[in-house]
Image 1 (cartoon, rainbow, N blue to C red):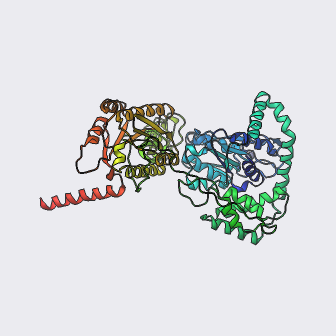
Image 2 (cartoon, rainbow, N blue to C red; image 1 turned 135 degrees about the horizontal axis):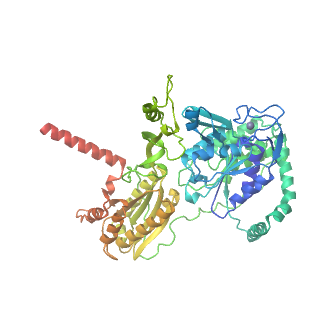
Length: 629
Ligand SMILES: [Zn+2]
């Protein structure tokens, strides 16, 4: 918890650091800590009546409620904590501009959003990794520029929006895109305290708070007042803190050592080190300030693969930083390095089970759900979306925000004479307004149902199958899908991973997936159907794609045809990936694909290169036929 507190305090001292991303599992009291920090921030002075929190000393010259006269009345208020809910609309975030009124009445009417409310305060996004991509983009643009800019069809509003951005996320539920990760100044890993006394104290405080919040706050108020004073003092000292050339060179050395691209990490570390020095009451940045800043600024910026563990190697950091300021370390670590924690597989269950390694991966072709959905923006199946290209116009169901100007003008044209138009300008009425109908791509739920029975292991096919599934998982990561993993073997089916956005978790379960035993195909289909039904209740707009990896064989449980028919009747889109190999083939997977109404592919046809090859082969065959004919 100490890292998190430090990261929040440093940002409170110097908002230019760029915010904090708190990563941690549920139950690590992330939001409690954010609320506690807001409580200790010094109050702000605002122009009375301004909805955009202008400072009386320096009002925003572009303030939509302005211009404010020089001697405008001021009022103090506590620093706000504004929470952005994951399901918020763009209008809720940026504010809404009534384009209809602008077109029909000629007035600019702007309703401020959460970015305006958060100006000079804290903007808190719980589960920031679940936020729509385009909302994250808007949010980070505003955070970087200190301004929110809203434009709809030529009507625009701009206002100041400077805030301390705090996001929390549970990495088990999916990662942020790397370019968005980089926009957060600092990250901390929140872990539940292991030490029993600390855990008990956390619970005791929580109970005390729930029982009597007023008394609880009063009890800690003295401590909070002291922290608020220290923050205010550090802010005042900030501009005077010196970063000399040696400190800047040390920062550059550390960034180079961790393979960080670009200069953003250097800048963030320098700013955080300055804030750290100011917080200590010092007037120059030292090695220790740089170390404290680097620990928080580097973990999400170092070069890493999507499936590497999070966090920072502190030993590497100390080596990059060189000797401490206060003389050489007399007592180098006497412990020999401990062996890496054993990651592989655990016990392999029954004696005939094995855990085959993951075979070669490849760039997978895009599998998609037929038809058009209304799901979350992504890169897989076709869908009606907020973004994407315009495919037509429609009457708006509520306030229009994405006005289709041509369609609006066309709708008004037949009524001009009746409306008494005399000049060159069209006379518009609200009823004329049309909005764009756009089409783009949505993300989906890709549920993998994998045959992990003994026949797959015996023929050493499981390596290739795991490689193929991992390739499809990497593809799902790029396309922003949710994924799930179910395997069937032995006496039944097992949900290895319920639907999640964490492709990392799926890859890890896949790596550890044991193989062996009989082939209960019908049980697998039934388990997948049940999982899809559960997920439809939780996330109804997300269309699923069932990817069944099998050779079509079944040696245990009932006949698969009935279970396949039920999936088909429920309209579940499916792809059967046939992994049958060898000279004599039974073609059972093809029959199963027919029963499911599924697309049918052989394992070897999953890669983009194979697809390109087969397209070429078809073209060449046609060309040859053409020449012959
Ligand atoms: Zn104002």
